[in-house]
Image 1 (cartoon, one colour):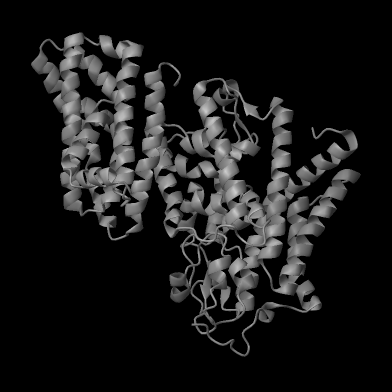
Image 2 (cartoon, one colour):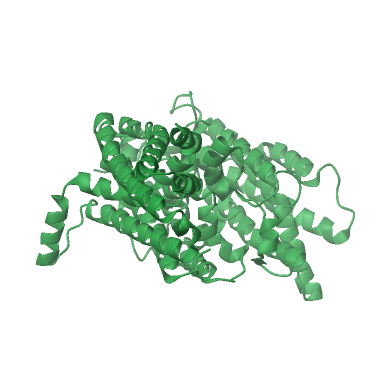
Length: 391
Length: 210
């Protein structure tokens, strides 16, 4: 049964006046200026233009986040932009380095494959037993080395937990984007059993990777190979793999998010995301539902793009372990019951301070991690417009 | 002792080959540690049968089979297809789905009441016929033995050495209170089954898989 709105319960609580919002955003402006420029403002006019656009883009979004009290819509704008420009930048790099998106056996044998965070679960167990990373990439140096990705991942996991999947993952913005196109979902009911599938995929790929000493998820299942790089089709086996990952991309990243308005790849398939859920237990921030404010309207249950808020979890006062801290639930909550929370503090304490603490950690990570890629992607687009080629 | 030490030194690889079959099953069943130990014994018995049958084979043919790639692919391919059939079947029939047709229901009922020991025994047997690197080493060494008895003894001790590494598996029973793991185990069995089916089918088809 739905309760009445409590007198002071509204999202306006976290809204700020323009002046206050500017003051709150000022440290972010300075930090992003320092981190994105590396202490040196570009002298080249085109690079300066791209840098300025990226810098203003991020800081405007952060300002709006504070001013309006809404999290998800501005996060998603940055996150989706990042995913699209990552693809532009990555594909351009591949064409520059190899002349195509396909990966030859030679490049694999020379260990010149860029490492991505999705491989991490498969590499951990064999690395523990054999002291060998089963991935044809470079440990340090080169483009996207294994050590750099591990370092970023450990830092992000400690500070954001599974928030990585909504604030850091350069693929997540794709199904996030497709899940926002339709106003209403075509398919509403998804059997909650499917939320266990990422764990099953994780178990299957970890065990098979350890058995065959091969990154099985990358080789067979990763849908994002469709928009990044893939092995050149030289055998029947690679042909089957190509059909499989391209079909998964179409189904999980385009069609199902479109029809269900959920991030299906991230919440119903990604094994890295499943493992990342465990890190939700070891970082400072989580999402809590205040039972005194909750009016049981179930809007958070309907809106959660990752199926992490259920009726049981609302009763329990916190979302499931799979929560990606995207902020959708708190944006739709009419009573302000859902909020970011710092572990060890009372749920009913000052919500605004907790929100600001989380946003500073998450948004700064997103801005720094994606800043370079976004600038590169924009430069490529400008080059395409002015010269007709992205490389 | 040579066989035992060979098994002991390369058992981690054998455990890695058996884990994709054994771990999803044990998680999916959600039994106690003690029941899991019994299940492991049944699985190991099947694996022993596989090993011993190979001991006879290896002694009889003096390593000609492992060197003949076409025959080797046929045997491993068949073992993979058989194993995938068992895993996919386990994933579906234990998941509580009922076939709508009357005949289907009868089959479903029969399968549900079939002896689980036979199921585990078959999975162990199919895993025992895998040509993992330590197993190939054992085949080569067994083929040099002078008598059939020596060859069998060699494989028996090799089996004992490798089995040590599977002893931790039953302790997955400590997680049985966490019910989602039962579903996850069954789903993972189906996924691994599909993967094995492709490997096996391409091996049987001949030379496509590399």
